[in-house]
Amino acid sequence: MKIDARATSATLQAPGALRAIILHGDDAGLIRERATTAARAICPDLNDPFRVAVLGRDEHDRLEEEVTALSLVGGRRVIWVRDAGDGLLAPLQRSLAQTSDTLVIVEAAGLPARARLRAFAEKDRLCGVIGCYPEEGRALEGAIRQMLSAQNVSIDPDALGWMVERAGPDRAATRSEVEKLALFAGAGGRLGLEDVRACVGDAAGVSLEDAAFAAMAGDRKAADAAAERALTTDGSSPIALARALLSHIHRLRRARIAVDGGMSRADAMRQLRPPVFFKRTDSFTQALGHWSAAALLRAAEETQALELACKQTGSPDIVLCLRHVARLCAQAQQDRRRR
Image 1 (cartoon, one colour):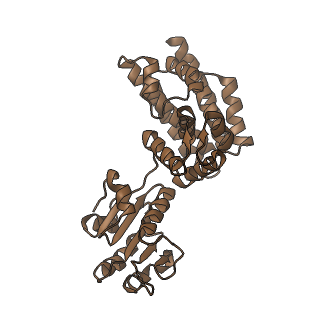
Image 2 (cartoon, helix red, strand yellow; image 1 turned 60 degrees about the vertical axis):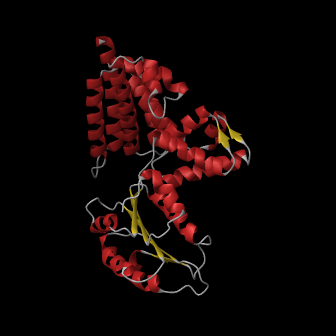
Image 3 (cartoon, one colour; image 1 turned 120 degrees about the vertical axis):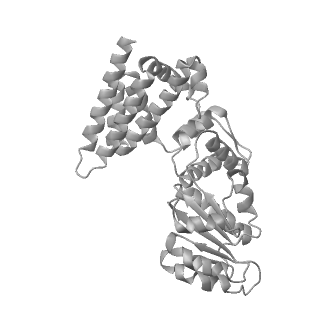
């Protein structure tokens, strides 16, 4: 059965009568984190060889054997299956047909909606199916606050907003940064903006963001410098730059549509999640004045085409990215003159 997002945390911390938990989605880090939470709910010591068994990609055929094995020291056992796909369906069905209280935890990153394993688990009352997708906006803010709170560390709103804007799509990477911040602050500490900027290793991400904001504001000199710095000095990939541009364009378009609907520019920026970082508001406002919603849609489509072009073998991806940045700057300046 599908587990509702609101019930996910409670289910992982107390699996109850569930015999299997299927974790699928695009965020491999979040899948591993949730699998760890569920496993520790059954056996706090994950290194206990009598109660915890981990099955890799080539060991899935051992599932039924492990499920029916008895713990020599007593207590419920955990079978942790990694890299699962539809090939696990038959072993899982045979295992569930056995009399056992063993919990099977399945990591199935990228499992498609039409997968037979997923279809079976969603209909079986003994299975819990949980989607694990990259968090954003308020959900990501809440996750970071929760991680810090667990270590008795608080964070200022502007510092949290800055971090949310730069958090990647992988929960494991985000947790790593949060743990580093918690260590810096110490138990009972509080993190301010400068603390977070000093600790979070995201120089490349800042350069990408600088390029995106400058390009959409029509600042050719700043955009060229930031794009070249990101691609050459900071080691960012052309695809990362394309995605940073696309993310910024989508946020601009949401705000532009809100403004066209009668909302003030300030309110339109505040309603974005996460809100525009206060040191970026001038550049964001400037870009809003240059671009129409239709022009932003075209820019998004062209940027998506850029990403596809960069993925082609032998593509001059850096040249394509720099040319695209220059084109966006020119378009912003043209729209400004027309508007």
